[in-house]
Length: 265
Image (cartoon, rainbow, N blue to C red; front, side, top):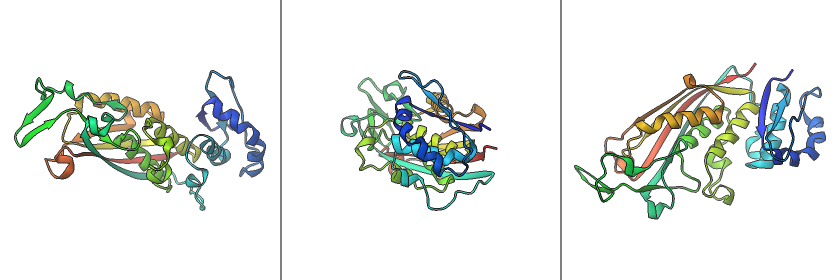
């Protein structure tokens, strides 16, 4: 019975082909079904996997295309609980764009500060308490997307796996300037590999500026697309930090995520 589908690039599957015979010998169920459909040099390939084979095949895919195998393969069994709950948190320093070297990207959406109504003709905004440059960037090894990082961390946490910093280490040059949607794609593969899907996601984005209300629909659409879920399962809230500490002083932005994973029968 085919119960789940993992998506992988054709190039990755081609690299895995020599190892399929070995995978069969190590799978929990020798009756596992592996099918390759549409395996060409220009299209994505679908790899349907029977339930008992998910973990082995997911590990193999991640070994070929992402983090090290052992990081996402705990020594203990991950029990097939009906639901699992995870919490994720991320914070990144903000700095003038020239210093940060990259723009602010939140939920896959690049935030254009100059579009904000509170900027003046010189690209600065003025409010009681000071004058701040609006062209801020985020300081991070990857693209510093606090929403994506928090979601990935919550998925790993729900599955009792290591945190995002251990899986995608900032000492690894592969992740330098990396689009964090790749982290989301890996998290989705891990989640489905262990037999789960998104139950619901609740995001709380915390930043003083810029205002993000107009950007939230795009952020939500990106999350839905990357995690193959539906609008009724994703919520994004945003709030300021009342000018308190580094977030309130425009020196950082942060995010909390709580999510629930549901077992796929």
